[in-house]
Length: 359
Image (cartoon, rainbow, N blue to C red; front, side):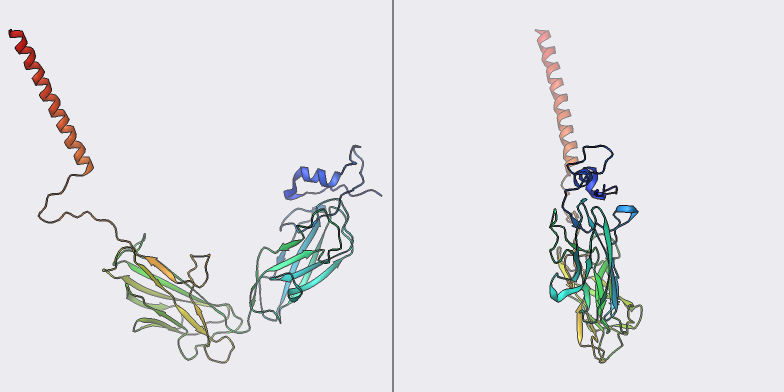
């Protein structure tokens, strides 16, 4: 019986890998199928990779569900060489590859060399904690197959999945924009934008107490009022407050306009952070809190929104004094002096010549 000849596209592996992996050491006879002595090499091709028989690798999962919903996960396992893989298991996990996070396991009876198999898992999320989760697939999780490489058997799917609670789940983002553009300077007008989003699967009600509070820090003064796309926003003392509901999957934007105080000094750092309150268990009370996050600092989460005040350099003349020349003016003065000295020297030389002619 002859082995597969691997007449397929290898994507990133290239022509050299194709020849080494599939032809083997017995491919000296042109036009004949040579026996394969390679070990199998299981891996998970990136999504969209061309495979045997015009196939394409699929590595995907349902993006989001409410807790208790089912996430559908599709993964493709391939073998890079012409070596046949006997029976093996493929296991799917979330967050970490251990028994406490297993989604499911499927058995593959056999995978011929240079071929692939596509598997589909259904994941019931009833017992899964709400939040974003990473999915990991492990080919030959029972380690039954002797392979050319064991280093490429675990694969992390490209995107995370969101399991939303059957209750409100509020996220807050806060950014600012200088109305004058450029960097912030004293007397500039700044517009803060606070976006509250409900990632939960239940509506957030307008419960007793404020759903958002944002304290105005030193160095800025409210100007132009407070607005909201829904609900009611107001300035109470030195705090911006908002009251209202947010439907599941919906959002509301609160805008606060302020002015940087005139006496703020150069390099002053002005930071503040809004805090949202919401009902995380559906009992009609806002017992959970979430601080706002500055999305422009992607390396951190739930950090305050900050701006640095800059004062441009100014060269205003002091009253009753004479301005010192600039560098260009000093250059003109030096050139004038040099020309004058040259002219005086020329006159001096001419006088000497005339005096020597009279002797």
